[in-house]
Each structure stands twice: as structure tokens, then as C-alpha cells.
Length: 317
Length: 317
Image (tube, each protein chain N blue to C red):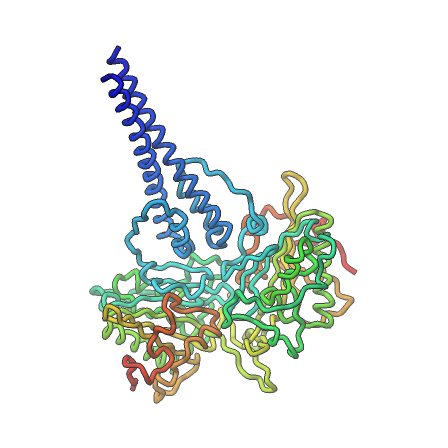
């Protein structure tokens, strides 16, 4: 009888030891995972490599954290990784050499566009982004008397959910020098409206916007890049601007639809249609040094480069 | 007596439970840490945020892994984070838009320069870096008949420890179009020799090399950037090249010494001295969009912008 007690005691001791070992391991695991998830929400480079970090555990199942807004906006991957900056409703990569963005990514849904009462650009003001080191920062003075508009990359009208979202589109990191008459207030504005109409029709649209510095033929088979710099801080005036647009399908297994536009930073005649500026996405990638929506197999995209096959594309007046 | 046995049994059970909990936690912790250290050695973005990752644990003391070559070369921080690529004896950030590097960082020690028997450029050949996606890659054909030399950023003569080190400096990611006569075989070569002489004298030198695309005054207070593109893949011809040099002191608490040179990508007369091309590091940072050796407080650096104060600087013939 006494022997049985002893055996039971030893068995219980062993079982509790193994159990507590596992509990301890699990406790440390969840503790570290929670800490890392916090880090991933705060640091964009941590987010970028987070699949690799979490795979490094691989000991217990990993509870997935709730997706934050960065995970939502960047769902289809980063076009590039140079100086990535998080804002409350868009994500931006900053070109410290040119003092304009490389790209700005937005995810548009109905809630962004319709917005809350009283939210809008009326109370927003352009201002320098003080989070950029002064050596790389553009300021209001750079644009003043430059002859160029302060053109939005992420459009103010796309971010009306909260006033802070709208205000942040007026930070100069999201601004580039644009020709005013015939571009910023012309074709570029039309393109922005077109993107919003796509959102109203289809519900979920991803947009990536940025500048291009395209080479020009100089004759004698020579090519060169040439662009102006404005202001004391030398802010580059892009030769072109692009928008790469991806429309998510409403059908459960529906294919996404992608198209891209490149507009010259110049007065564009009123009679041009947006269709005139459709562009092969690979060409934009080549000149911008970016890679768009890498989460999607290109071959799976219907009509990405062939507008004639598109059911989404509509002619613009 | 029997009661005592029971109490002892319970106490032992509890102690083993707590002990095993801790052992379990520690086991999971070291397991995860080892996995993460492997990741940090393989992925440069993981390395970049590794202090934050390891701080996220903070439960047990973290055993530090042996420093790998990337940790050694990048000891004083990353100048930028765009498309960072690891090679066996240097680290490079690639500008996919211009098809040349943003920067190349090297850490020079006597072992790199003196090298092994038979190691050298004789058996090395220029070749495209196939790890770069084809849309962003420069090729041998781009340089052929372009009128420009294939100029090294990390100099071949700095990497003679192993033949593979030397061979990798001939990858086209480490190459930029340079004027041959009077530059690549002239002043630029002198600068490379000067860096090696510093290494021979002081033992440990960090060098960061890269291209610049500097704006030029166009009159009427306008500035513009202009540079040629060569080849089918549009490889940018930099207007200037820089080298930022940091010499570590041999004294235990000695201050590091920093200086920087900017040379125009043009024939430079033989009678010029390197001193003529000394440049303020902040100016390079402004035009390159980079931030050098951020691990060092600038105020701690003796003579960084004032060559006259330098004890290291020597006149060049």
C-alpha cells in the first residue's frame, strides 16, 4: 500500500514537472509573442520581416493579432523599403535625396470617402513634416514663388474618415511640385476623381501614387534625365506622376483588376482622356525602381496591361 | 512520520513544478533566441531591428551571438535602407531606379589588403548580379561602347583576403559608369590608394562609397539635375562620386577620425591634390539622402570637416 503511494507520488511529481515545463515554455512563448506583436505594430521594418520572425518560433501555434491599419493598407506588399513612414490612413516611402516621396500607398473604402460630418480640407493646412531630419526635409518656403503647386500624392478627398487623416495628407512628405493649370487642377484631379468612383462602385481599391524622373532621348542614341530643383532645400520637380490602381473583386474567388496611369507634369489639354495615359505597370516599375502588389501573381491579373479587355475601365469625358 | 513524508512530497512536487516551469520558459527562450539569431545573420532588415526584437524578450539575459561579418562592417549604422544587399566582404544598398548602388560600405583591416597568395583581380571578371530582378539589373551590354569605364565602388584591391571577396567586387551592382582617362585611372585611383595607406597606418578603416547626382545652377536662380543614362537598361552616369572615411583610433578611448571626398566624374588634372576635393559630410548627406556613421556623435569627431586640424591628413603628390 505504502509502495503504491510512493509510486503515485513519483508519477504525480513527474507529470507535474513535464506539465509545468510545457506551461513555462508556453508562458514565455506567449509573453514574447505579445511583445513582438506590439513591435510589429510600431515598426514598419519589424512588420516587413514579421513572417520570418514568427516562423522562427514554430514551437506552438501563433495566435494572430488583430490586423492594424498598416497591415490592411500594405496587404499586397511594399513597393520599396526606403525610409518607410506610417501615417494614420496611408503609408509612404520618402526619397531623402529628392525631398519628395518614392510612393504613397492608400486603401480606399466607402468609409474613407464619405467621411464624418465637418471633416474636410477646409480646416487643413500645408506644413513641413518635422519627423523628417532637417537635412532631408522640404519646407513651405521651398514651394513659395516656385511657380509650382503643392500637389497631393495621397489625395485629400480620399481621407475623410477623421480630420487627422485629412490633415496628414497636407504634410509636405505627401506633397510634390506640380504644374497647377492643366495638371493639378486638370487631368490629375480627373484621375483622383476616377479612383474615388472606382471605390464607390467596387468597395475596395488599393492605390499607389508617386513621381517619375523619366529619361529623354537627346539624339545620337543618347538618353538623359533632367529635372528642376526648387527652394533652398532642393526639392525635385518630377517629370511625370504615376498611379497604380488595384480593384479587389467583390466575388469570393474573383480576380483583382489592375491598371496604371502615367501623366506628364505639364499642362494637359482638356480634350485628352485618361485612357490616353494608360501605361504598362512594368514600365513604371522600371523607371521608378519599385515593385507593385507583389503579393499577386501577375499572370492571375485580368487585363492589367490590356485596357480593351477590361470590364472596369470606363471612358472619361 | 507519515505526515512529514506527505509534506515533503508536496514540497518536492511544488519545487519541481516551479523549477520545471522556469526550465521550460528558459528552454523556449533559448530556442527562440537561437532561431532569431540565425534570422538576424541572414536577413539585413532583421539585423537592423534586432536590438528591438531582443529587447522584446527581456525575460532572461540574452546570450550574444558571435558577431558575423555584416555586424562588423555595419558597426556604425546603415547610411540608408533601400534594397540592402549582403556580400561576403562588403554591404551595398542598390538604387533600382538608377541601376547603380546608393552606397557600398567596407571595413578595411590589414588582412583584407595583404591577402592570400594568388588572390587578386587577374582571375576576376565583370558580370551582372543575377540576384537583382531583371527589370532593375545592369548588364555588361549596357557598358559596352558606352564610352565609360566600369568603375569599382568597393575597390578590388581592398578585398584580397579570399578570391571570392575580390570576385564579388566585379559584380555590376558594385560598378558605376566612370570617366576612364583622368578619373578611374587617375584621381579616383589615388583616393583608393590613400584609403589603403590609411589602413596600413591605422589598422581599422570604415569606408562608404557612392554616386552623387548633384544639381547645377541654370542661371536666373534656377537649379536642375542632369545626368546621362547608358544602355538598354538605362544605367545612370553619376555626376560625382563620394567616399566617406572613418579611421578608428588605436587608443582604448581614442576618438575616431572622419573625412569625406567628392570628386566630379570628369577628367581631373594630374596636378590636383586630394585635399582639393575634401567635402563637408553634411553636404554629401544632403545630396545623397544618406546618413553616415550615425552610431557616432558628430560632436565627438575631431576634425571631421576641418582638414587643417587633422593629424591624419597627408598631402598627396
